[in-house]
Structure formats: structure tokens, C-alpha cells
Image 1 (tube, one colour):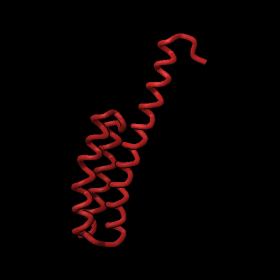
Image 2: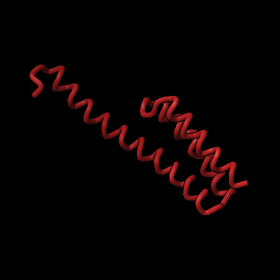
Image 3: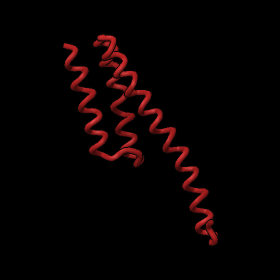
Length: 87
């Protein structure tokens, strides 16, 4: 258990940040699933529209420190490739 006031504050702060970061990751995953669902359905227009909405979300995740830059790049690259494959 934390004994110093700084350690107690750090625990409280970490708990708040964990909730916020979990919500951010959940939001990003939801947008990614929308793209994947459109790709599975074969709807190129919907997939392209969903891809345009997921790109800023992924970038925002990187800016806020929830995602690593390379992870975001990889996710976006793979999604783009899948959408482009719809032809």
C-alpha cells in the first residue's frame, strides 16, 4: 500500500488515466470494426467512408499516447490495403 501522499496521489491519477485511456482505445476499436464490417459486406463506398473517419481517430490515439506511432501506422496500412482490395 502507498504510504506517501505523492504515491497515493499517483494511484488516484493512474486510475483516472486508465479509465480515460480505456475509453479512447474502445472508441478506436469501434471505428476499426466499422471499416472491417464494411469490407466483409463488400460495400466499398461505406468502407471508404469508414476509413476516412478511422484515420483521425487513430492519429488522435497516437497524439494522446494511447497507441504507439508504428502500431497506428500498421493498423491504418492494413485497413487501407483491405479497402483497396475491394476494387
